[in-house]
Image (cartoon, rainbow, N blue to C red; front, side, top):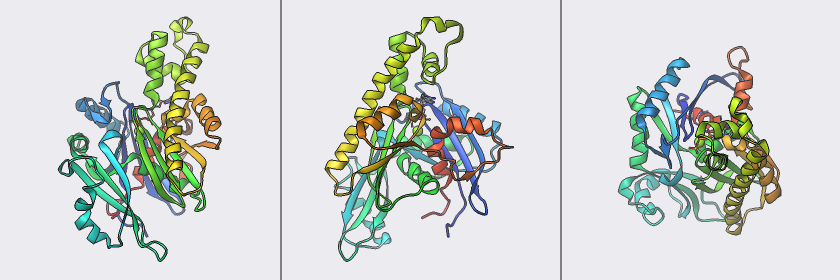
Length: 355
Ligand SMILES: Nc1ncnc2c1ncn2[C@@H]1O[C@H](COP(=O)(O)OP(=O)(O)OP(=O)(O)O)[C@@H](O)[C@H]1O
Ligand SMILES: [Mg+2]
């Protein structure tokens, strides 16, 4: 039985802040609250909080307008400030490892260990056929994490868990989808500036990589440059909207052409990571790709990834197995924003006393 109280999942992304709150129903989780607030460009750059006041204001306003009950949140970080390594160690108890983790991490983490928060998870215990255990080592830069913690405390929230984006995606995936024990899957979360790759074989993480900068901002920047439009206009065009009175100046085919070019680059970058994994792994080939993040909504990207990699691609619906009351929530809106809600939903499944 899972212990501890469910937390509010809070995903502070480059382009928007998302929160998600669920409770346990009799059969499934039920959605209690969800909200999303866009952030102006340059508020967060490369995972670092540049304009923390802007984030604090947006956060306060988001929680007030949605009348959020509860103060304890789970957040996550990603990008350059996070290092994840899968390592093999001789068998030992979790408590023993906790005592020696600092020393073990020394050889794997390319940062000064005084500057990082360290955590680990035992993925696979040693067995008769392998006398080593698999451990996932996670290090996150203190200064970056502390900036997030400070903003959160400033608005009166209490951070209880700090997770990593690619694991929140996995957390969400496990309640919504069947995790096949005989197949290899790639979970790819493509946001505005970071793409999180998490390859899972036999139900366990085999490989993770955060590719940055890689994501929706590349489309926005290219559209701005080629079509001479503002950030907001480019965001509108990207999502298939038109610019109203000014729309004459923009040729839809041109938008599509620019976006197609970016999709090719993004897909090639993703392919490089998956190829790197395949070349260094004894597991079977990747049989399915699950995309999430707002950029998963770019139609050409989805198609190009499917063509280039020759495996079926599916877009994640993080609310798939979560009961949503149609009288309380706008279902069409939730469908629209679902790919962007993936990390927040995974975080909402975290508990106060998980480990
Ligand atoms: N309909 C759409 N078509 C194309 N792109 C979209 C659409 N909706 C959202 N996006 C893009 O998705 C991105 C936002 O996705 P998401 O919310 O997953 O990222 P984020 O969490 O804010 O950023 P990151 O994780 O990189 O810090 C933006 O670049 C946005 O323009
Ligand atoms: Mg994100």
